[in-house]
Image (cartoon, rainbow, N blue to C red; front, side, top):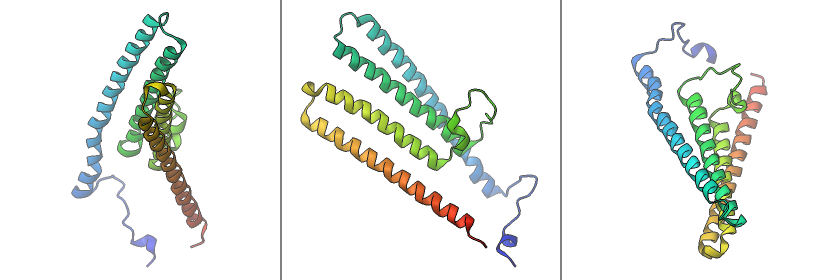
Length: 186
């Protein structure tokens, strides 16, 4: 008897036994978590509008240095918001249910090939981008910061970069071994 004939054949009706159905259905417990992230996204929109208004109201009184710091704060909020969108859309699509956006003019390009591995790499890169903004702000405000804070932020940022490189390397090795296994004759 071959290995393929030993595998259970899924029924055409899609019905599962009770325990597998419970386990598979438990993915919907993540729905309130994604809804909470959508609420957090709304909070970031309010924060962005408040910070933008503050910049607009004080622009004539600010130095170029202060304006640059305020703009970096706005960029930081946008990048965190982008991170939230990647987690909400990518996580929901990967772990809960398909969004069925194929053909929609606003479908994110990356969504067509998202999986848990791709999502991890995208999240790592977004976190590095956010960390870069914070590190840049620290260096711009160098006179107002302690050297310990600058040092620790640099170390943490470096660890984040090394972690992202590690995740990407493991992903590349995993994909290479999967491709190699698929090319091997049975």
